[in-house]
Structures are given as structure tokens and as C-alpha cells.
Length: 237
Image (tube, rainbow, N blue to C red; front, side, top):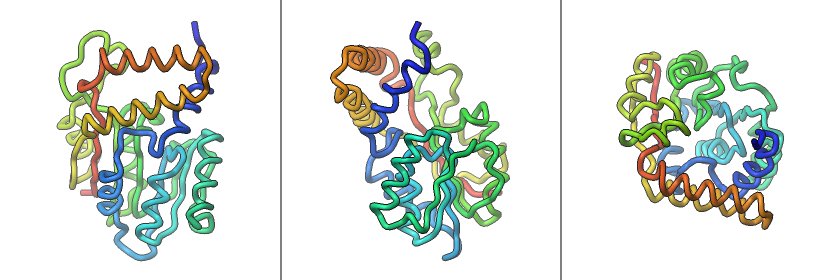
């Protein structure tokens, strides 16, 4: 059996090939950044589970505000800090090696993309995030959903996920108003999966290629078009 520690370098290599560690294209990224404009020029953007920080950095650059990124993965944080320096944002955006679930400083804009598992479920994450969004603020929440009924093989990999309507209901149940709801396109998914596997291929190692082959087969035969990725822009009710 392969341990999580054995797989960690492979996941790192795959993620390093990505601009965003999510099925997110450039057009949608620009649109989402515009949708989460802070309500004041002094607004603060907080990204919990920021990874390499690309979306946070783009939001701070677009709206000329400060930001905080929180993550536990040292490799991602190193990439984020290098990228901040490249963009001239290292004096404005700080990255913190911390457990996102322990963060207690509210912000005007909160980002949480594919990181709800830190709290347990999407419902748990939304409830916790509501306490971190200032009254006039905005939350961008993104996570996995089912686009259509999964078969047993798909459910074994991804477990219980809501559909987009269920995700929106979870947000309203946590005290938010849903301002925007959408899912990644199939093209965004195809690009994400292909780029993710390309990071493995660059290792040119048998174990990496085997892992890439496994991922490709699972994507094409099990979850392509079944698992979606939802994007919600919500505000406190």
C-alpha cells in the first residue's frame, strides 16, 4: 500500500505545474477577482488554504489592497512568497504557516477554494467562514459538487458531495446571501487535469508516470463530467 508520505512529492510536482490548483481558467479568474472587490479602499483580503496564493495575489493587485494567505504546506508558501516578490506585492501580502481553522482575524474579502476539508464538511466550513467575513464583506467559496449522479466507483473516490443547488442551500443555511453561483466548465476541468499530470511527467520517473496514468484513467473513465467544481460568491445576510 502506498502511504500519503510516499505520494506527497508526487502531489507537489503535479501542483507545481499549475497556475491555480483548481479547474479555473483565466477568464473565470478575472471575473471572480472583479466580483470580490472590497467595499472600502482599506479592505483586506484573506485566503484560508491559500496554496501558492495566485488568486489572493491577483485580488490584492487588482484592488490595490493588502492580504493574508494561510496554509500549512511549506512548499506552497515558498512559491507564494516568490510570486509575491515577482509582482511587487511582498510588502503588501503576507503568507502565514498556520492551520486555517485557527485563524480568527476577520477580513473584508475571504477566499476559500477547495479547502473546506480543513473544517470537515462544506457546511462546517461555511459556518466557520461566516464568522470571518466582515458585515459588508464577501466570501468566495469553491468546492467539489456532483454535476450528475455518480456511480459507485466515483462515490468511493469522492464520497458524499452536494450538487450546486445543495451547495447554495448550505451557504444560505450558514447565513449568507448567494450573489453568484457557477461551476467550472468541462474545458476548465480538462485543462486542469492535463496540466496536473504534466507536472508528474516532468519527473520522468516510473512511479510518477504510473501515478499520472492512474489519474488519467480515473478522470476519463470515472469522474469526467460527473464531479464538478462550484464557485459561490456570497455576502452575509
